[in-house]
Image 1 (tube, rainbow, N blue to C red):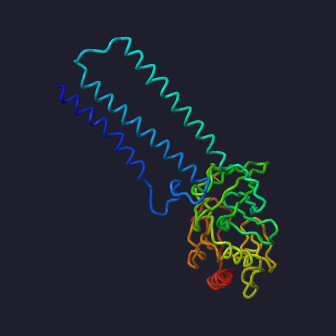
Image 2 (image 1 turned 135 degrees about the vertical axis):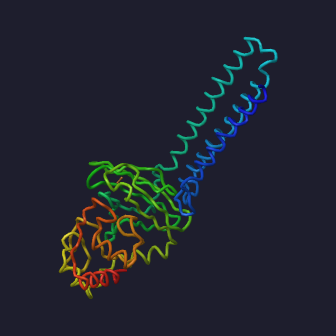
Image 3 (image 1 turned 90 degrees about the horizontal axis):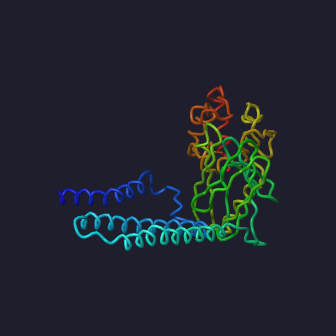
Length: 328
Ligand code: CUA
C-alpha cells in the first residue's frame, strides 16, 4: 500500500516536468521568432524575466514535490504539533509566496523601463500604419512608402509611430519588442534597438478580423552602410520599362508604383515589391511563381483580403509578373 502511494507520488513529480518539456518544445523550430532568442536590449530584459520566472517556478515545483513526497512518507510517523504546523503554513504559505510575488512584480515593472523613450537625439523614426491585413511603412523625410518589411540599422534607436487605418491591431516582434497596440484614433509609440543583424519575424497580436493570423511583418536589421544603400534604393522611382502591362490592367486602381501613373492607395505600395521577402504580409514567399498565383487569385491564399481575383490572359499575367520582378 505504502509502496503504491510512493509510486503515485513519484508519478506526480514526473508529470509537471514532462508537461513542461512538452510545452517548451511544441511548435518550436529553428526559425521560430522566440522571445528567448532576443535580438535587442529590451527583448533581452524580457528574456531575462522569463528565465527568472521559469527558475522560480521550477524551484517551487521541486520544493512542493519534495514536500508532498516527504508528507506521504512520514504519514504514519508522529504528527507535528499544531503550533509548529501553523507556523509552517504562515511562513511557507503566506510570507514566502508574498515575498516572491512582490519581487517578481517589482522586477517586471523595472523590466518595462527598457521600452521607455530613451530620449536619443539620433533615433530613427519609422511610421507604421496597420491595415486589414498588412502593414504600411514610411520613413519620415524619405519619399517612399513600403509594406510589411521594416529595415533598420543595427545599434541605432528605432522609434516606431503606430497608427491604424481601420480596426485595432498590435505590433509585436518577439525578438525585439513587446506588444504595442495600434489604437483607432490614436498614435502609439515604441522604441527598440536591434543589437545584431538578422531578419526578425513579427506578427499582429490583436485579433483584427478573418486574416489576423496572416498579418505578419519582418524587421530586417542590417549594418548602417547596408541600411543606407537600401534607403537610397527605395527612394529611387521604379523602372517604367514594361509598366504598360501593369498600369493598363486594374492593378493601378489599388496600388502605387512611384514614377508611373499607378497611384492607388488601397493596397500596398509596389514600387520595390520584388525586393521584399514575402507577399501578402508573410503569406507566401516572394517568388515569380507565387507572385503570379497571388495576382490570379489572392483569395485562395488569404480569403477575405481586399484584392479580388484577376481574370487575366496568360500573356498579360506574364507581362505583369515580368514587370513587377524588375522592381527591386
Ligand atoms: Cu491586425 Cu490582428
